[in-house]
Image (cartoon, rainbow, N blue to C red; front, side, top):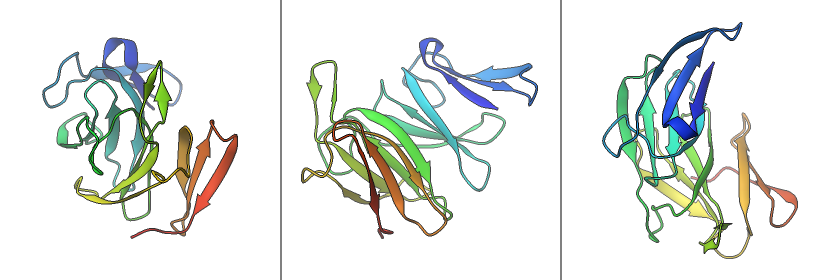
Length: 162
């Protein structure tokens, strides 16, 4: 089991009975370091993807915590984040990241972004007012993307996007 420890800027690893195994990460902006990591997912290859809200980027690691790649930055371009929330991965290991609409007085355009397994921006949607404040997302085996929007109190379903 892999858990992000946001307060301590690290990922912790536990076995199936909850016994601590190891950890990686410290506070910082270089590869393998974090400033407020908030969620973690595992893709079909077993690689771990961590979003780091404090740096506005996503990092990928192997199961042992070895850094593989990073992508993203804070900004307003289509491929940039403002408030990184949650992520999902599809059967092709594409990575979906939602950019929340608001947090503690900060407003940004809510959207969902799709990236390739190597972190290349593919597409985005939602910044035309479809979302108020998207939180969680999931992708089913057919590629449909489910987005819970706490601002609209609903769950929206989107057909596969290329």
